[in-house]
Image (cartoon, rainbow, N blue to C red; front, side):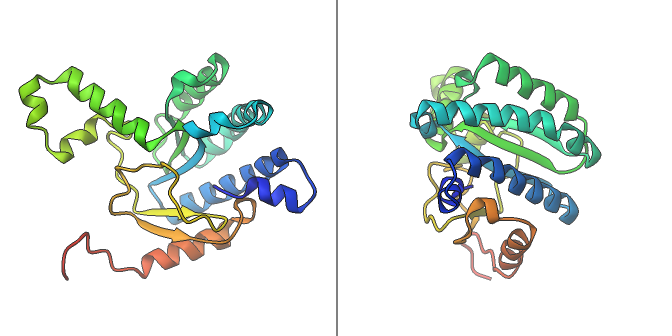
Length: 221
């Protein structure tokens, strides 16, 4: 979800103003996903690398995360959305973790779209922690005999299907350490639209572009 800071700068505002407006885009996309019957929607909200940003911006972002989760609970329940947060939660504050647990527990039995917030996440970190889990759980012989698909159960996304479509906003043409393992055969969609301007019409354009693609997974049809 890129372009919040640039969006705010274009309007003579502080960067955090763009993050607040970006929350509205998250809500719009979530409601569109529910409307379209999309089973999983994930957003990359804060990477491990983002901890290196100025402290005041990090604090503002974390406060915004907490307020947004609490503010969206009624919306989650009304739309039967199941809420999850995935990432290195050991780096998050006690208060934020408590809020995550409360909202996740309240929505755990909802049967609609699963909405995943990737927070303090890194694809490289995910693969590394998965390898450590596998090494601790298996004998050396079992570890040596592991197949690629065996690693899936140790990733933080265990039990969640790999993404079909990844959308990158604001003209950036990289994946920024996001779901490196899981996006091996995802379709990519790049747009110049800054995230605060990415609402239902832009989301629908991305879905239509995806629907027109021929997914072969390396095979010949």
